[in-house]
Image (cartoon, protein in one colour):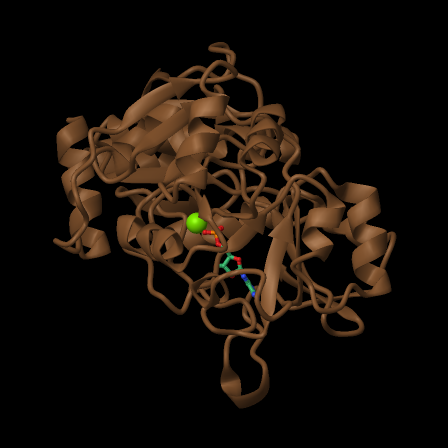
Length: 354
Ligand code: AMP
Ligand code: MG
């Protein structure tokens, strides 16, 4: 079953035949951090945990290493990468300008799930990282393993999510292996991630700053410190160039079809699909007798996620991975509240179902 899933994802990502085969090694953190850092320094690809999702890291200052990320993921070259560094000083070293908004947000939320887009300094990183653009996305992750790895490596590390392009992001080392096993040198296993969805991205090259992607840091926290325009992930700049390249509609998607159900309709929709012969999984909301564990419900597999946005987000991808691995044809998702606190979850569900 695992093999079939991997094959399906490969097909969807357009599997380039030119990725060398690697027997992907699993290094356990914290013991494996030194070895993982040495591999990074040598220009190899290392998947590692952050508090958001697992990242696929490579030295941001080596063009060949960065190109290997795009090849392993099957990622279009026009989709730039987030650079991970150990502290604010290392982030500033990559920037040509460090506006007041960057200073405020970085000192309030780093280490943490906030990515800042700033003007890039000419020679600090390979052009491939920024897709040739004049800006760079940077963040200091709040995960002890990620921070120890970045400190030991001593170089800026470009790291998109450690999965094949357009598929579901990984929140465990096993998810990384399912998607990239055989295509990367190693994965540093630091257990399940705590936040469970990607970082919030804010472009501070413009005033007011622009939200490019909803994410694990709530919008209200950012807005409390700097005025912000909601780019909705679909903003375009001069000449129609996407300001958040790669924010295309279908993204963060499992193999199964994701069906968003209006409030109160999830069970009926799931039952109708089951009756039509589909293998159905349901993502419900709120407490259930199973304490949120996957179980057989009336209309197929069922998982209940917490009725609190950050806790729901923390478990969303793991639940989607589970239902995908269980070979569901359809995943019916019960509606989530139309409330700003749920914006990041709504965004990911919408993209998964596009
Ligand atoms: P991922 O790491 O796969 O979650 O994707 C990172 C995302 O960050 C990209 O898809 C872009 O939307 C965004 N990003 C990275 N670098 C830049 C940049 N220089 N300007 C604007 N957005 C960026
Ligand atoms: Mg990604």
